[in-house]
Length: 125
Image (tube, rainbow, N blue to C red; front, side):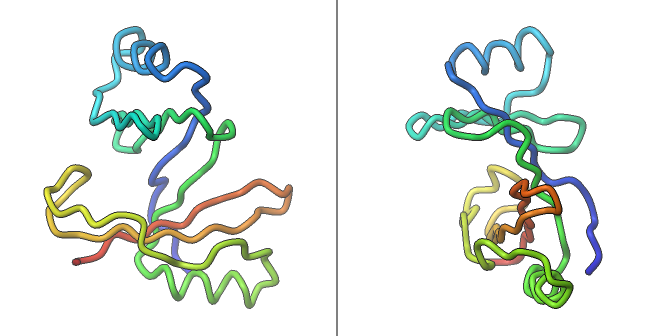
């Protein structure tokens, strides 16, 4: 497995409107999009996506990989607790988060401390 970068960090937002204003206006992060419902705000955090979300726990890491299936297999072989296998999350037909017509796949596992961590692969749709 080869982790290429930190893809996304999620942060809990009890009040989405207030959180979007804080991260955009107060901290000056570039706002990418807000989807409400379901209560999601996205920002560019130095090339890493920051998601403020009503239902997120604080600090859920999403690690970008080139081969999510291979990474999933390697984690399982290493005895890591696997939670949710690779699955399609989003078809980015219009290029909201990068090149158009790409799919975003995710899988989730737990780290040594029991924290949930996500793997992310973007691939042609």
